[in-house]
Length: 280
Length: 301
Image (cartoon, rainbow over the protein chains, first blue to last red):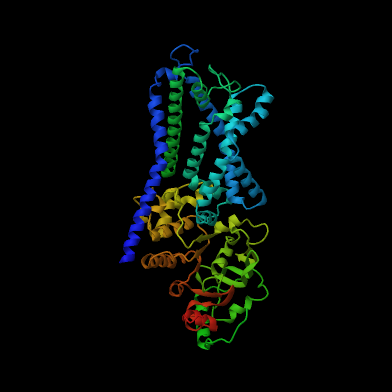
């Protein structure tokens, strides 16, 4: 009986510690969300989404170009980063024990540890210097490089979680290996992979450093992908370090918009994948 | 293969009976190829009688890396009969059936040497596509493994759809396959439910239906009932009985009663060797080999 009481007590203590740790972990998250919302909501109005920034000293204006710019940059990054990332992940999951596989995996791990500003510098040297201009392309390439390792590794890990018995089931039905991989393994892992991709997208959507000297910034609309392009993170940085009070408010508003954009993207991707898998 | 002192010598009687029955009901032997060296006569010698082999293995050896798991197996698989493979865990019986449709080599490092004849064609010949072999020799696995992203209907059609085959009347195939496994009445109102929403026994019958939809010639079953309860097991066994009308079946089982119930012929494997092969009733009543007798009577050391 003595022992049993002790065991029960220990159980409660450990459980309490777990709850406490969860709360501690949630406090920063909650306060960031709360603070961004409270400070940012004031700067949000219709003009913020529809107008260009006003010159210094003039009240009002918006960040329409930066919102579109962020969508462009992240879109380019997705186009360039997701397909090779997923395919590399498939390669690692299927043939990852080869010498090349180990090299690819190691490189991906090293790459995910590379500071984002280094990637920006790399793209600056590679793209901006050669084309002699800041551009959305350069920004997109920098973000794509940042996404690549995350997408690759999460695709690999999630494919490895799909039971091998499903592959055998497909092969046993006379399905060629490549079809079994694409239409059974990848399809089964799709919801998880989508979440992994979303986390990568969310991460690069908020990247500032690599954009500073690739996409640079623009107070106006950029008419092509070959021009300097405004983005929300860079604008947040520029506005936040400025000496003007109304710019600070706009920086908070931009932060809130960025947060909501990432959130919406995240949730809709999850819903989309879940829906498609169920419908099948 | 070392033949030790047979503990029970099959009676003259038994052999005669076997031959008589086979003369009556079964067609004459037609080994597709000239009998390869060692084994051909060995099975005539016992009470198997005359069989038409749909498949036969000749000197089949299998390896995982450098470990040999099958040491030269010569075994016929009778057409439109049920052949059971029994033996203790790790004796190579699963590996054996996986060699029959080239699923063994799917595991990294695994390979097989020797001949496996399917209608006189060696499926291990260089220019044979394993994918084609597997469409003719279907497989049902130990654990039911319906595709979780597919509905019941799509699971049945999976073999056709994943192979990119045009299906002229999918509904008919779904209904026919599900009827064959006696699952139709249970699921016909919910064909769009997930395949994984079914019970274990239903899932296994769904997997069998999925195999049948491809109309294979041979069906390999690797312990198909070991994850099922007795009622579901009985249903699957009933199903095997019906399927042997039109298919050649090889079933691996741990359960000797099951072998006795469903199989026409039984092969006893031990440590990667085929110890004994015979008509099921002979194996279970008058085995030639001491090890077979010890195993089926539960005295195995």
